[in-house]
Length: 259
Image (cartoon, rainbow, N blue to C red; front, side, top):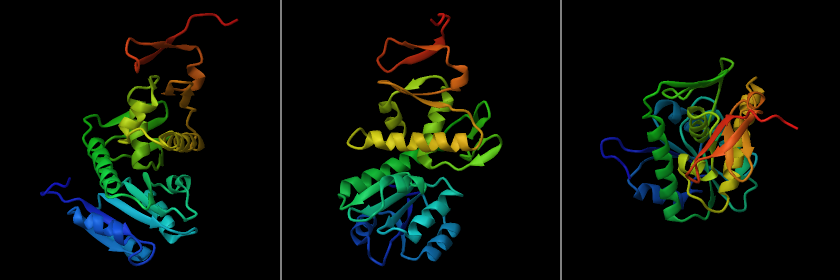
């Protein structure tokens, strides 16, 4: 899973010393370059000095300084963050996503799940960093595909790695309808229990970020089909045309008069 010439560097922030001993053992056995700490100050220092590919952050209570660290990292970086919590902890998936995490794991968790999540995050980062186009624009929205900087009205708005992938998908083909399956494929998650909630949470946060910074209402649910990205004020007179393939949708101007 790792490249011998470029090892995968992972920062693991535990809630307490050895509180993620099993997860720590699994990652170490996977031949990753693993850095472990249970101190937020140390984690901040390490993050500033090293180039980590993925962060695993354990949050076993609320409030938690580790959750604050997650927010702090997300305010300045798009590095993938996996939040690990316990089944008994009062930390929900929504709280994790709001803090800027890209993925959410509830312990106990199997070895296969841990490795699968690492692979997903690495693949996302690889796809995001290999785009030939420099940036995408839609009205007052601008997404830089190299630096991952997203701006609304020339104001920078921080996106998680997953939010970046979703926004890039939409902005590349504005006014197209994407199914939930296509969105899941884009963010590297297979269909399964809870996937609808994952998409809804990310879409909801993107809407809020765009709207709160003066952007248009651009993400709309198309019932029984998926989502489309377009300025609603300018597409009310558009109709949906389904292509030959089940997952192909196109918006074209509608010249039909309303009743």
